[in-house]
Image (cartoon, rainbow, N blue to C red; front, side, top):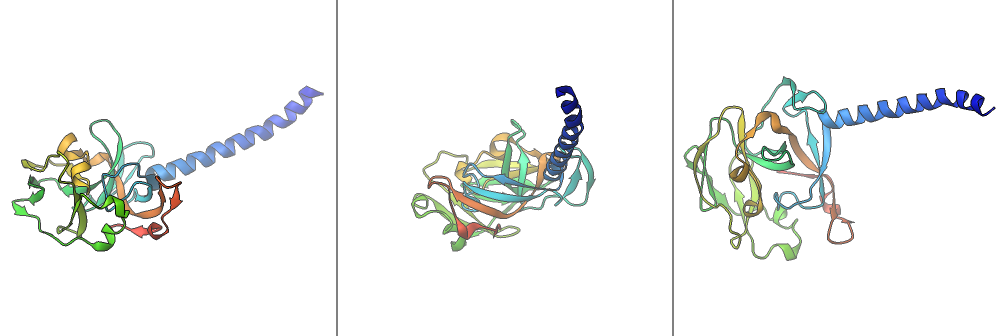
Length: 231
């Protein structure tokens, strides 16, 4: 009797298992190759992106890859200067979010926190106050904020008390590689530390914040950052 019951239930179980596995494969393939969302655990992109943000990543912004790999099936665009992108660190494979600063063939230098791109100093002026105001009031003192004027204008943050690489000699970006930095310039592990990023390691372009939680305040929502478009 018991064996008969098992024989009847096994086909049903196989059907459910197949359906669940297929659904998981479809869902994870979609996230791997088309679109994804990513949590932000660190402040390397402040004030643009905050800890506790969950960002939307367009993985079809530049190309189509085989799911679960960095192998390209087709390419229709390349990252632009100023794009905020998701990439794999060339140092240890960690998934990072940074801003594209240097394109293939560019010469990048920095003098006392001022970027110099292809021999032209980047202009800095007043920051976007709305972006600065996204930071909690207790996180603003001790930092300097500026509007950085290349490609799309955005706000960057400097921390004078930090011992960071504020100056480096001109570097020429090789073909098929990119130079990336965090908007939180003095607290970002980026191309100043791990070097140029291969094109194939860039996963996609970050478009907006899906939602945001206060990690240090019982995970309460930051309603004003829901569907917040990034510059």
